[in-house]
Amino acid sequence: MKTPPTPDEQPSDAAPDLKGPASARLLPNTRFGGPIPWVIALLIALVVIAAAGGLSLRNLADNARADLSDAVTVQIIEANPEIRDQQAQLAADTLADNPLVTSVRIVPEAELVELLEPWLGAAAASEDVPIPALIDIELSRRASPDEIAQLQDALSGVVAGAKVDAQSEWLRPVYDALAALQYLALALIALIGFATAAAVWLAARSAFSNHRDTVEVIHLLGGTDKQITRIFQRAVLRDAAFGAIIGIGLGLAAVWLLGQQFAALDSGMVGGGGLDWTDWVVIAAIPVGGVLLALITGRITIGFALRSML
Amino acid sequence: MSDRPSEIVKFDNVGLRYGTDPEVLSDLSFTLFPGSFYFLTGASGAGKTSLLKLLYLAQRPSRGSIRMFGKDMITLPRTRLPDFRRRLGVVFQDFRLVEHLSAFDNVALPLRLSGTDEARVIKAVSDMLDWVGLSHRAQAIPATMSGGEQQRVAIARAVIARPQMLIADEPTGNVDPDMALKLLRLFEALNNRVGTTVIVATHDVHLLKKVPDSLIMRLQKGRLSDPTGALRYPPRPSVKARDAG
Image (tube, rainbow over all chains, first blue to last red):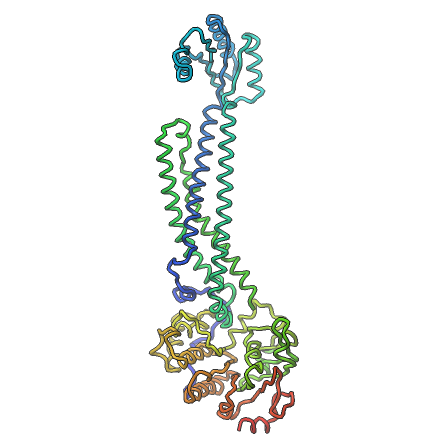
């Protein structure tokens, strides 16, 4: 009987990373037939849509706030048109001397009538309907509530009944609603992240369970937990990367379609909700984050499962 | 401590139970020496496979102490077990080949797990498959192979990394007598020419006489006994020769 052949060198005691196609073959290739790539694709698409929506709302609120935060309106309510015009001019002169004020414009009555016409109809132009005088004031910066109060005091001294409105205050409920929607988007992203981790956890446990015999054999042949974990991690990486690519594609398509729909509204406010390049960087990072989340979850899941074996 | 202990395995008062069931192995105390050839015999259910599981580190005992390769296996952290498992070659009773891997990849597993260069893996595995007469079946998957072929793949996988100890559970159970004898000669060659300690579990008493220099461990209801029924190991030389003859 011949002596059994032996390798040229004794294997090392170190446990190297398994590389190459031989390692890939240790778990059968399901060719994306399992549910996990598709679950990840859907979840990534949802995160992309939620993130794009949240970022768009943030931009919309920021732009609106920037437009309105350094502007106030003075309203003078006086039934007599002549007195009203005099009071408006007096108020404008008074405000023009204030160092915080950069420009003062008395809104022409014709413009006011035009603004009110959709609600009041022809009556807007009638002398019977008193229209308050409006003065648009641009400030050098966003005024604090105290500074607005000082403006109000200064005006009250010269024009009784003049009322100063910070425009940003009018839209506070809108900002609050936008902020709530942003938090909702964030919560949605967190929930979807949790769902992704849970899906990967279930899939990794299922894969481990399905291949438990192979894992046991590898263990008994001297394979380490690290080697086995990496074999499973490669499978998770392959599935998650595939799902992430599909997911970002679906998500971007949905965002583009929604963008087209909103653009068709041709509204000034909606126009402020466009995404800039930093937003696109955030959106591009979502599939990368999803794959990393899947990898970490897979690693932890397999690590725990292996610890239950000798 | 020396790198090459005088004993390769030492069991002291070892017992094993699964869960809360009664012990399947009780009071096992014995020593195995490097380069020896052992048969482990006993009726079905005597505990042969359970004892082998302790030897190939698939199970820890419920009590007692086990030293292997000079180390205490009871207190050894599980993260260090792979170092010792790589010194073992195991032929499982049900082969335990990886179903979706070819014969070549199954045999290559121990080398790849221990980081052998792929070029050397290819040469060593090709030589090994040639040695067991399966070169022509290198790319076959286990499901397409006969029981005897799977057995030989399992043996090739067990010996490819030149283990210090080879443990075989009923390795001739699925092959005809000619193939059984051939496989036994493979084990003998490994034992005589490479110095591997061989432990073969079998209930086939005809095999025992085929390896005259072997030692026999007999299990009865989870306890070791020599043919006279005494709970001693190793058996007296005269008893061993009579039993083998």
